Length: 150
Image 1 (cartoon, rainbow, N blue to C red):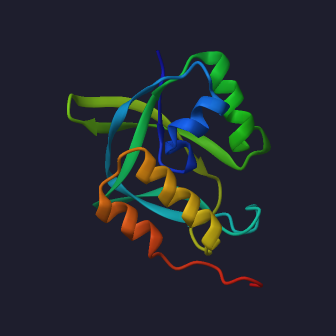
Image 2 (cartoon, rainbow, N blue to C red):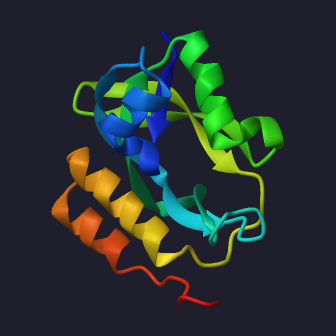
Image 3 (cartoon, helix red, strand yellow):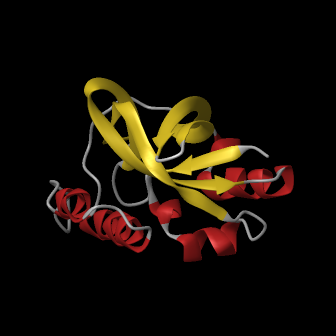
């Protein structure tokens, strides 16, 4: 079964149950050598969108889901892959049980721009619900964001 690694709002198991109801949570892990950042402010609905970029000194918390084909196409619709906003990459995720090869969405835009405070809150809440470490959640909540009216 293909494994999907969520680092954005899909970390929230409740949200994933709505978007991909046949895709159980498999666990969580870390994506070493990558960092969470934001891009595509011009295509985002209220600011830049979460994405990942290579960075040898960083790591990103992810939640893993077993996703059958029919749920994958549903996720593609939710994530805007059919609009060219995201493309998929396959990367190795470190878990307590070893490495897992998983696919994830990456924004098709240059890094930069600020997310909205609302969007950062959604990401932090999703990470917290998924069991991310407190310092990771705190870092999400303290990132710079767009002010209302920007």
